[in-house]
Length: 284
Length: 249
Image (cartoon, rainbow over all chains, first blue to last red; front, side, top):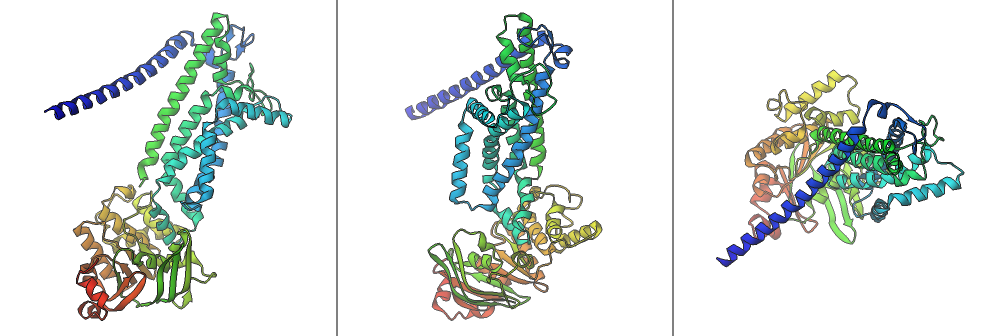
């Protein structure tokens, strides 16, 4: 009798903790989204997303933050493409060309694990050092390079995790039909496509929201960059700089920028999930 | 014909296959039997050089496919594999539609120039394994949605589509339910007029039902080989007798 009661108490306590944890997460998400939406929605207007800031982003009361939206999208778009171009071959090499017990694969995975954990401000500082070395100023190119470096480990580790459960039988099946290793890659990419979509989702989410790495490298500007060598504004920095302004209109603009950033991240998440489910259709 | 001469396979320090001398007759079913870990699957994977992807593998001796040694360095391994189809233990459909699964091999081997020819050939291959009626109207749906038994027949159709001369089957029915298993078994019997089939099996009854020839292996060595009726009814070696009577498995 006592044993049964003890079991029930344990079961209920565990359940209670799970419910509590879940409640904390839900409250946190709702309150963050609520704060951003309630404060941002008040300040939001068509001008905010369609105009450049007027009279300086610190003190100017007019205009919006189109510069930051475009800058963020430029940096994230370019670095996602570059990141995928570097990461997919790394993942395929690790999982198709190298053997499972390969020492090189172990070292490469360890290196990416370390890079995964490096704080973004360190990437920023590293990028800044590189730029001084090459005599570059803060620019769109600097931002793209540093964000690419920041997201490559996320891409590689996420895709790698998805690929490690890859059924080896698929490779054998392709090879036994007369495929070369190169020809098997198309099949491998199809199988890991949901993993690629998830990795892209995580990377883009991280890239678009990161302020520390672009602070020293992309800089900030009131205008939209017309070349790679010009500085570029980004949404996280628009929030960061404007939020500390003493002028209420500028602070409002910061909240509106935060709202746009949140909406973009939400849109990316929803689109990503849709794409992932589409890609999962053929997964074995 | 496939023939092995003094074939030795080492994986790391382990000597897996020892001086294997075998001939696999054409247009017949040869069943390789033996207890777990005796090297049956290794032998099969050596015949189409899939063994190459195993870490630390070393091959010695000869594997002659129609007189050409495939172990010597000059052997063109992709063409060899096309000629020797493989059906593995668990069905392994590719992550694509039913149609594309069968078409994949034809595409990479550039077998057809016109799509119409490819479609006809894919349908023929699916018909050959008796699955066409079951999947009518579902050619574009994912292969992974088929039942396990259908998947295995699809894998066989995929192998047949690249027009091999030989078919290797590695316990091809062990993951299937009895009805699917019977269907696949019957298929192999019906295919032996066109192909030479080498089959690893764990089920003695299956070997008894379908084998023309039997190879009994133990600890990497060939203990006995010959026509199925002879090996099953009148085994010469004591080990074979013990294995067939169930003294060990």
